[in-house]
Amino acid sequence: MKNSLFALLSSSLLILSFPYTGSFTPFIFIGLFPLLLLRQELIRSEKKPWMYAIWYYIVFLIWNIGTTWWVANASLSGGIFAFTINALLMTIVFGFWSILDRKMNTRYSFFMLIPIWILFEFSHQRWDLSWPWLTFGNYFSVRTGWVQWYEWTGTLGGSAWILLVNLLIYRLYNVYRVVAKRNQYIITILSILIVPIVVSQILQVLAIPTLQPKPLNAVVVQPNIDPYEEKFAVSATNEGFVDSILSLANTCITPQTDLVLAPETALPLSFLEDRFETFTFSQNLLQQVQKWPKANLLIGASTVKLFNQKKSVASTPIPGEQRWYESYNSTLLLTKSNPPQFVHKSKLVPGVELIPFSKYLPFLSSIAIENGGTSGTLGIEDEPMIMTLSQRDNDPSKHSHIEANKVVIAPIICYESIYGDFVRKQVQKGAQILCIVTNDGWWGDTPGYKQHFSFARLRAIETRRWVLRSANTGTSGSIDPSGKIIQKTPYWTKTAFTQTVQLRSDKTFYATYGDWVAGLSVSWVFISFSIFLQHLSKKTRKLQQ
Image (cartoon, rainbow, N blue to C red; front, side):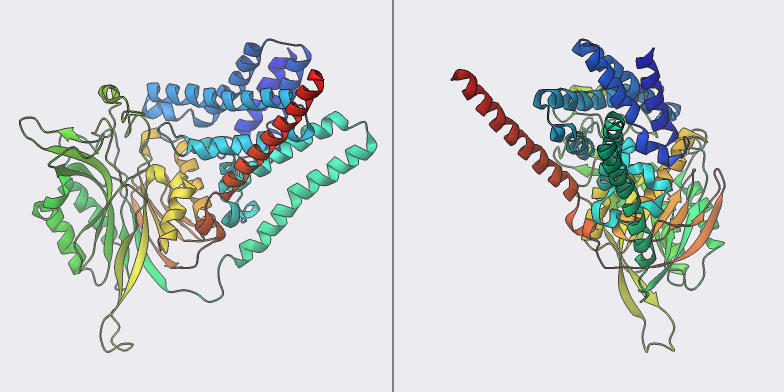
């Protein structure tokens, strides 16, 4: 009975503290405490190792389902796979730490949960089954005033904060009757809780520099096309979608507009990139861009490229020809003076856009989940990419000629926006603004699209960049470099809005050095193992004597 209570309490606290499944953020600082008590009870009752695993798995499975149940709205089988596998991975990591702590049996080995879990979160963003939605650092996306120091640490810093406080509270529970130790732990816990928040408040004031960098005027479009009923219907045409998007944009366009942002797969019907200008819809887009006083267009599209030889696991042979094609989820930038620029999505959704491990097991491609008109593995960019456009000043009273200034954009497609390291590499390459295009309508009116929007606030803080976010369905909006939401559209609404943002070229510590917290964790684990092995060697020699 006690074990069940601890398991239910821990998973409930983890769910209730997560953004938009409760958003009671302070609960996360005690969310793992009942799980640690559960472990303590299992050790005391001398349960078999497989019993430990079952109880841990129950906690993590309930947590996964309770926070991301909406995934099943897009694909029931995909949702079940995500819940069960992610919970299993968490069980393995937590179980590994539990065994290691018991074997080493030192006060320092207990705290090794911090580096081990951080290395799990770091690795979980870098393989085919990547699903970092439940990274602990994401919990503060609705409390950005607490974590302005993410500009130094990224979300892994938030994960370390949560783990440390939970472990200290557990220690406080076990020494509570010892007055000296109790007071020591209380002071330590309060300091670790309060100091980061105070520092964060100071950084929030400093997030916007006093010298305002050059502005960019943007129009963000939310066409609100049903992804199930309209977007990929038999009667659907790119021409029709273009008309809808341009009509919305033109309600907001002014002579000062520099950029129009339209959502992911706003052009959902695939077309060949090298023949782009031959299509009717493309002519409509190009003509409209030329008519706008100085605005450029960044829009999402489904695209295809042809190859004379197999390029990657995403390459599909064309029947009867010695050629291959690859499909992409892309962003397309149209300017007045430069050729069309295409950037392909790099971080693919497992099961929908990527068949995990198909590079090594090609037969897996045959069991692809169909979604959005494509199946199998999509092609990707080899590294994070940026785009450039010219920002023109057409005021002749200021200049004797039209002045063109380069603006560097980070095109971020949907799922990529939850990867801090991916986005910071775009900033490292010179991106001055983050432009997210997405289509969050697959999940319906659930916490999913709200959480997705919320995580974008962390990318703003990590890089100190403005974020413009265009969603086909879901929530579009603008976020300033402190993570503050400036504008936010209602759900399931056809609309457009204008936003003036400041372009920045300075780089934060995190944008420059990345996930150094993971590197520190590797060192911690390595040193701890070395100390343990030395201790074990000395113990063995004594027994031999």
